[in-house]
Image 1 (spheres, rainbow, N blue to C red):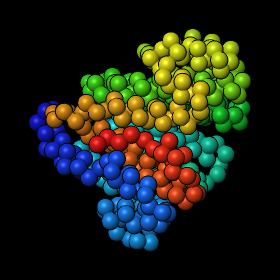
Image 2 (cartoon, helix red, strand yellow):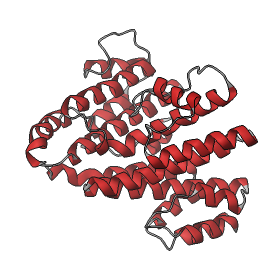
Image 3 (cartoon, helix red, strand yellow):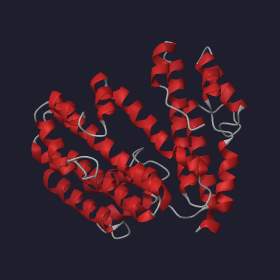
Length: 322
């Protein structure tokens, strides 16, 4: 495996040099408007060389370029499971709803998953999810049945979302890559915290929590569900006894503060891959870094477009990998 990734990691290292750093973000922040931000980004090679590209087209082009580059280096999707499975989950949910309601999909699929949207739609229409992993296939079948019998689209979503989280954990453990295990645990635990907080505010019952929460090592699901049932104060109190106490403080401030904390800590989890040369870890770290970079640029462009004051905009900026 070490020889397999030496060349790929070397190529990733050369690409890391072009990632946006704090100085680049400050330059974007100093731009008077969104149009000037776009000019600066195009000067740095963002987009497809067409100055007429809209902000969303430019960002989509960067996402596409990232994966085109990574697929040049490896055809193995396993090292990218934490990033690809949420896309697949979205597409499975959308396909099931289209199949059950007998409607044509319009703007409901996301690009970049492990399975093509057309293939996922065919699976849903034929009720044959065997190409998926066993856990996802079972969840998809249950989601179909639930939607047919109850018409409850939220139940459909919960079943698929939990299965995707469980797959992230499973594939991380089976990968043999410590970074994927760490990142997977972080992804699932913080998703559980967000689910518990939303369920608490919406006063969801215990059955919902038991269906929605995906077991992970760093959280006690029974204690988490109990706390969520007893109100936000008790939920924050429980989280204060876990490795996510800092996140609880952010959650108390706002949902957006928690999301920023989650994303920043995720970047910290992959920093160690800068010293790795013989595994797929650096490829995964680069994919995460690029996604966070694109998300940060999206935040800046949106802020400039909507006239958000610099102080408020800076509060939302994510940490960079470089």
